[in-house]
Image (cartoon, rainbow, N blue to C red; front, top):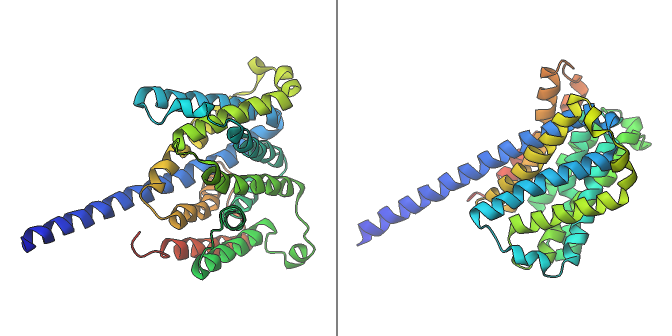
Length: 312
């Protein structure tokens, strides 16, 4: 009996490790897919209004998630009618993030913008404390602060004087405001959840966000010459709608069931590395060594967060 119980325990432990590895791979893929939206977004941002591209993105992503719900029977679609004001709040935060992201990418470099994005976990931890009473331990706080220092180093390109004077570029400043909305969105999802499941919640958020953006930016949407848009804009629209929205939503959903939240959050710090690699492939070369110092700090923060829980 004891031998049999021991074998079952080993099998269960091995199964948990395999599931955790799958979760890590999913978030590794997530960080790469998110990175693509910065490089593509920077190339399309000045060719289409941010409201118009956000509406198109939400329509595509919502259509894909709706198809997932119908084909797999995931979640309870009727939950979309349960206190729909919740989705208006979530949709507002989500839409504001993406509109401001594309507005910021008109002038912000992809690497700098991705570094701004790595400030989101620290801000999300702060909003999680305010809205949910979550108090991260000292280890996580230290890792988040180190990651934030690395991000600021990249954003200000190692210029300490510019940092002390807060000489933030216009694009980075706009996107930073967008990231505040993204940071608020994360704890809001949990606070407003009524057990409908992440896919249904994401679908409701996309529908509400798309409708709100359509109403707010109707003039921009209606005046856009959709048939005359350059190919890079359509590539960006479908990329962010399919890969950087619908697919990443499912990857996060998959990973949160297999990894501690701190480890899911940690993969945000990989995004600038992917952006650097992608920009190099696209012919823009590598950033200066002074910027790589900040990237190295974010990598240390990543390792600290991944080691935070020995069981994950």
